[in-house]
Amino acid sequence: MRYKSLIIALFVIFAIRNADAVSLKVNIINATKGEPVASYPVTVKITDDDYHKTAGVVETLEFQTGADGIFKGNIDVKTGKKIIAQVNYRGINYYSEAGEVTTGNEKMVFKVLVYDISDKKEDIAILERHVSLIPTNEKLIQVFDTLKIENTGNKTFVGKFNDELDITQVLYIPMPRGYMLAQLGGISSSKISTFSGGIVSRQEIKPGIHQVIFQYNVLSETGFFDLSLFSRMDSPEIQSLFLYFPKDDRWKIKISDLKPSGEQQFGTRTFTMWGGIADSVVKIMVYGPTYEGVKSFWSISIILTFAASLTGLYFLRRPIRLWHLKREKKRLESVLTGLKDENISGFYEPFVRIVTGRLKEIDQRLGT
Image 1 (cartoon, rainbow, N blue to C red):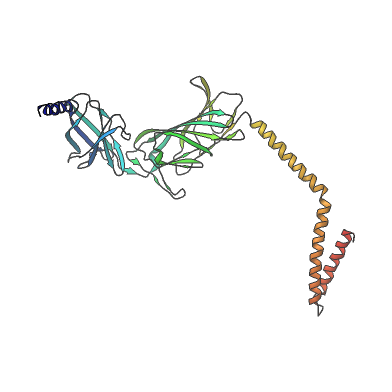
Image 2 (image 1 turned 180 degrees about the horizontal axis):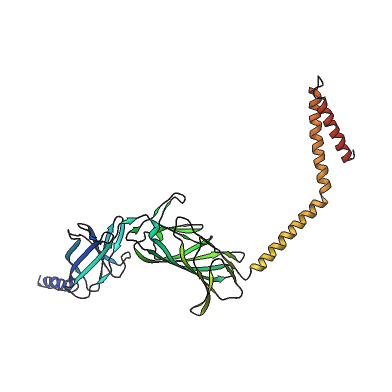
């Protein structure tokens, strides 16, 4: 019994050493109105890292702010763990910065800014779009696409329902037709829908500047790549577009509206850069090393097929004409028989003469 009590005491001492009491303060502020959010639930997550959506979350605690929009309390957290405060306001999750527990009995203060929501796109702008085209082989181009998006307002933009696409649209991002999305960053994969000419984002845009990254591939069997971008009227235009392509004499590229802007070094490769204000339509045509050969092959094939067709029609013109005349003769003989059967009073006599004359003409052409 004495040994059992000793083991329990040692366990309690070990637990106390590894759990530190933290004095916690969480302040929720409605940044749209500039006022505290009173009597509102707040979630405190204890994690192993800086992220709140990973398996690193080891404990979740639920609290509520007071009349002043502040929660104060003590929690037991092991040294080395991190704390993140989360608030779901009007269906949108907002988070504080992560704070690490470094010593025992410390005071930690967290501030969570929340916003009202809006569906007005006037405050949304795509400041920059950087598109890097990297040929993998003569039939495949990898594209690394980075967008800088800004919400200049003081409300979270949640978009509107798009009747044409039958989906809630926060942002429409034009893409080359035939793109194959591989990776993305800065946006949840569950909040996007892919269409033939673009990507629709359903992820809300909070006030401030945000960055979204896409990596996708474009395949062409002929060596010709049409990477043109077509914007929609219901989405903000791209204010500045920058395009990068490796220096390679074997490849040709044609771009509308963008002007050469020098060269850029990425690692060991040198890229030619184009830049400018993006129009609603930006035409980007890339011609691979094998495109001219394919083009010539198809041109010759079309010409040879057309010539063969004309030759065949020339030699078969008489048999085809005779075949049509024989069909017409057979049909007119049937019509003439019917007219004679009904021509009791001589009413159809003019028609009989016309049909008979045409039959004689056909017989002359057929040589019968």
